[in-house]
Image (cartoon, rainbow over all chains, first blue to last red; front, side):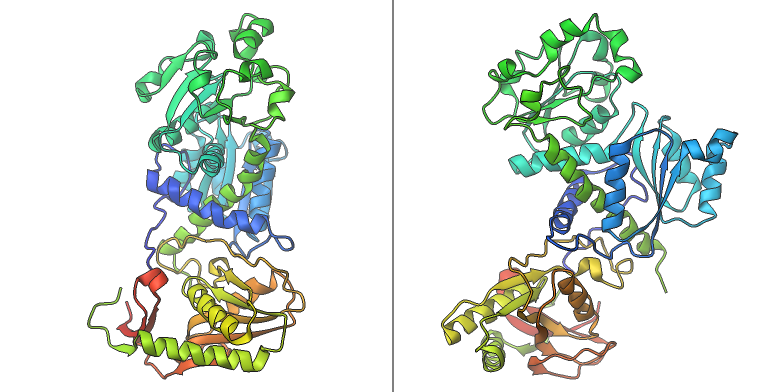
Length: 320
Length: 181
């Protein structure tokens, strides 16, 4: 009654179109779902009962897909998993045809991962269903940024004014772009750290307030949180650095380097980790690490996104 | 929103007296049961449950545990409600097994909130029994739900809304009759 806020977006294509109020609504909503996920017995609520969710993954991502699927199951949704390998795409069907075929089955939500940055917007234009971006090329991965923000907010009680370093392969990371949108919109101060070849300076044009550093050590003492990125060898990280030894020397987060950081610094990593490369096990499993908490938080945050999109659909298509 | 001119059905003193009567009825029915708990339905069922809990404690000489249910996710009209209702945590910090639960809400109207509340409650365990206490029963039922403890019973036309205000949320206590928005 007192709450007349309406989530104003049909789709979650990225963090870029969201307002700080939208972001706060998702994070607040996730808090309610965290309680559902922590119940001793029945961790399922009927909010998405009789709703059809299609998980459309054109790229492998076991952990993101599992997290979405658990979120959907906890909301009682009907789920169809549609894998690119087993679909008509391998027979030459275009993305539009795939979308139109799906639309003919009237799904309520489509959770999609695709390597092309524009694929989600294309689908969103052609479908009544809400599209959730579960990762697109090197562009955005909004639910990862939301769960990072949720984890940080839970740890510090706020995002505004936090100093956060994002370290590693900035060039190939979609997590970085979503996080840059989110953290800057919410008033955090971001420093990007990485070797010159993996730190694209053109990001400065979109985010003029973000700091850049080629070295981690001088930045470390000032940070409230460090977000380590995965070296994406499958996307060619290896070709951009002179050698593993040098990368480790300057950027690996290890116990000795942690001595320079604040005692209560929070360590995040979107996973999967290359243990012994960008981060040592001692740090990843240490007391400052929130890495498993991020995984846990992924489920209620994704529940919040799915819930807000479905509840919003009723604003325009009221049920009889 | 209540305009200042909204007719007042109960002022703060009367509201307190009606709650006292409800608490005495609960004490008479279940005062001998060690397993009695109160569970308030968000939003205004919670402060009412807390007040009933305080009254029961004074009456029985022992604390009565209080829980809170958020029923948003169990509503049958989730996509029809205006706005995006924010789900807030349900907190039932005790096992429900073998408990006597008194569900507490402010107004009993269609019965749909209570239906949702029962579904939500039973997902947390299997209580021995669940009874219902409301401050106002305004009639207009759409489901076969009745309250066991009722403060004020009225027949209010569908065109009007009974609004319970509590100082914890609304900075004022009282029951008001409003036009439906």
